Length: 470
Image 1 (cartoon, rainbow, N blue to C red):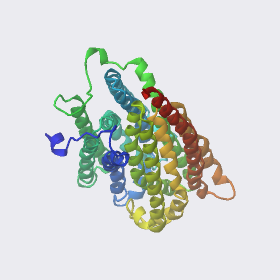
Image 2 (image 1 turned 45 degrees about the horizontal axis):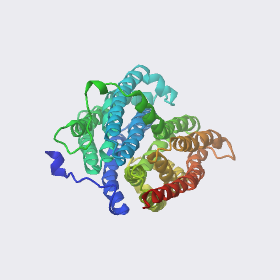
Image 3 (image 1 turned 135 degrees about the vertical axis):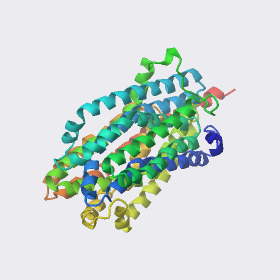
Image 4 (image 1 turned 90 degrees about the vertical axis):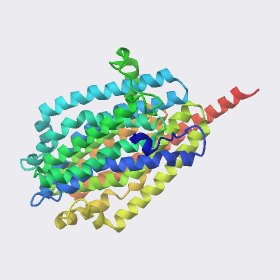
């Protein structure tokens, strides 16, 4: 069977080197994140090269980003909310609680997926106009969205349940579930877009089919009696509906990840509106490729923090504060080094990076100055990601939610609206909002994490020392 051919070694979060544990978890997550990103990135690469209409089509697809981000936000609400609680329960050896969490999360993913399909099917057109679509761009945005939404349940299952595979110590299997879908998308995209002449509809259809394949693989692992999963999904009568109490716990913790993704969609929608009024369709396309590049560059950073997250949660549940502290330090150091390297790449080879998404030289020329502004404080994202991951992994829901809202809603959105009209900045103001928010939000969240989490870990260590004294 494919599972066994790929390798089923389980990572032991409780023992061994922290650096090795994070590497064992983060590397498969890095590959999975890269491949997961290919679902949308490959669409943009191919769409940007449709003869005669690539730039316009790319701008139209960019208008669908807020919808896609909203779907991902609900996926993270249950996956990122449930997986840390699941890992903490697993660290405490509370099997009943762990099974209740994984099954409740699955039910929530399914119910929400079907609800979102209905909403976007009925209100897709007005939602796109709300997000800044013009009479020209709607011709590309609406056909893409009308096909894409039918894969919503598949996205919810494949992306939302993968964290529970990783939280059980099987990151390679988590990587494989994404690999299957991403490779399928790479193969199907050119067939549907160019060979069959389906254009943007073909790109969306390729994505839906690929997501379905990933979802099937996830379900086979989590339901299969012969799989190595330590905790499996159940369809017994008492778990057909989500448990209310557990649902509240999952949603309350997952709100931080939801807010982060939801506000990303909000920021994209606001940017599109402002750019449409100040620069037109061309600068919506500029923001589309710059946002796409940011997603590519953020992948290793996300892999590092997400690789550390289950280790932090498990050892927190097992009351091993020293390992929690070591995990936080290693995560912050490595992600900081990486984001510095990412910024250097943007400054030294900007044209090759932009050329990944378009061959239109006028679009690249317009994007270059905006790109340098947008990525100016990229290194501060490491502080934001490390702090947010720590709060989420430890179940600190209030702090996680607050700092998700603080950076995007309190800082980015107002600055995106206000800066273009200040000091003659114009279009530059839209692209300056991101680095300013990185500096303020990243510094504030990381400082708060150090001042609140480290003292708690010291108290836990002292309490544990007292209990083990003879």
